[in-house]
Length: 378
Image 1 (tube, rainbow, N blue to C red):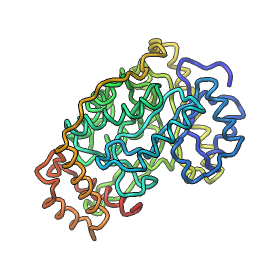
Image 2: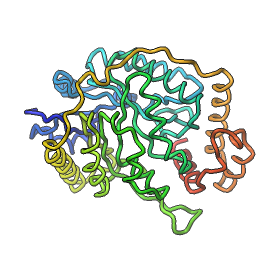
Image 3: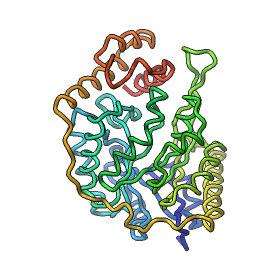
Image 4: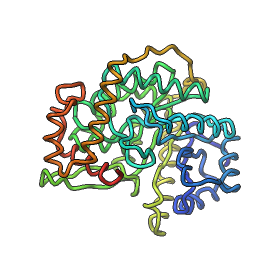
């Protein structure tokens, strides 16, 4: 893999022929310094090919393998057997590969099938803060390595977007955790709520950023507002220029940064043109890292984010029961409503009304986006 700079440039790899086809030229050139593996996406594969295991082991031995979780559903108030199985699976793969660090997504999954859908936001209150800290401790106790959370790409209100960074800091600081700053997620939030992305960046705890993600996405029309388009974090396209600009700015502000990862789903890497663009995006990302490296402050020492076991206060039983009921009601409404206007009417008479969910401030086009996501995956 050659000499690595202080910040390692890498790619997200899964057992997907299109991703692997796009990654192979980069791997053959030995310019990929780290890889990120969504270890919980293996529900589709009973047996991992020996060559793929060998690839993971090679990076693990160089302390260059990251474990990225997708389906834990950190804030699901109704604990499920799937979450127990997820923790057991994490223990098993970490004991074999010894990840440099482990990461998961902010939010919770709607519906019963955790292998579908996208993470949804939760109210930013004391119940979800304590629940999130408790769940991060469950992960940390299993792996005893640094653990981090990724910022969310989707919100219902502008107020939640602005509070997200502060809430993330409170969540991860309890266990000495860190933040994955996904710059395309940040771009989605900034665009959808008409916030200057540079100003939104300043609302995040940049001193806690150990890892950065860059990716692409797609546009979706809103049927509720003729002139409105929504930016979606679908990971099925190349990296837009504005995300590279955000990366360049972030490189000078995230002093604890050690890894940068390019992500794209296999569905967006079918053509030769898209695979070539993936390679160009990686080289562009890597060159940005190389150019800014001499001017960067030295990254914090390797133990900066070592997992720290801690005593967590338990959320109140009433708070958890309320959250459980409200999540269940929201999921049911998103799945069963016959239209967006009827969904909005139902929300206004639900248990989420006049609560910490602040549905009175929700953007109707974002309610429509959530409805479309859940209808697609229910």
